[in-house]
Length: 288
Image (tube, one colour):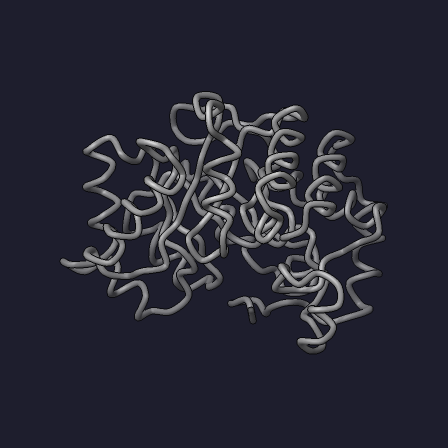
């Protein structure tokens, strides 16, 4: 397994993580099997959120007695201090842990989101208080908007950002390149989403008949997955979360195991493929 540095203390975390969305609805036996396979493969980065159905319950059971070697990340979608504090406490109980290695503001997308969370009674206060209390080791946020990401990283202290680093978005729209550069300058670690994304779903039926836990149509061909992962890991990122499907998670792990820095010929292959369908966003935001 490839490991990269996270945070100012340079913790080693696996270059691929297991997202809770990948085990949602699998039941305890199958979700535990996936968790154990991930650990056997050297994965130590696990990410979950209350909005991922029963994933917290399943991950909490699956990681029992394994917590000490895991970098566990969670999130809250709530913007106020009161609601996010309740969310944090419930997640700690459900995941059977006393602390999170990383706790994040979930899905920051609008200027209103920013103004509320950074206000006097905003959710950022919950994260900062919890860090002082030892319930959180690192503070981060996930974001689908370049404008909001810049506001957060330029005006507040975060250890990491969870943001799309997608081959098609970068090649077609240069999405996120400025954020990647700013994070490098500020010492903010980058955790990546949507590395293996292809395009938006055409309709609900297309999604339900294939990858119902994925908000976008993922790449499924091994060659393209490997190139997409190569592309992302060749940027200034620490780790990424594959799409919400156990088989695609394992393909993501395999792509990391065979990783080498991407070359120009491989980038051209991705450029040609990027012309075949639309991206999941624009230069400024993700459409999901």
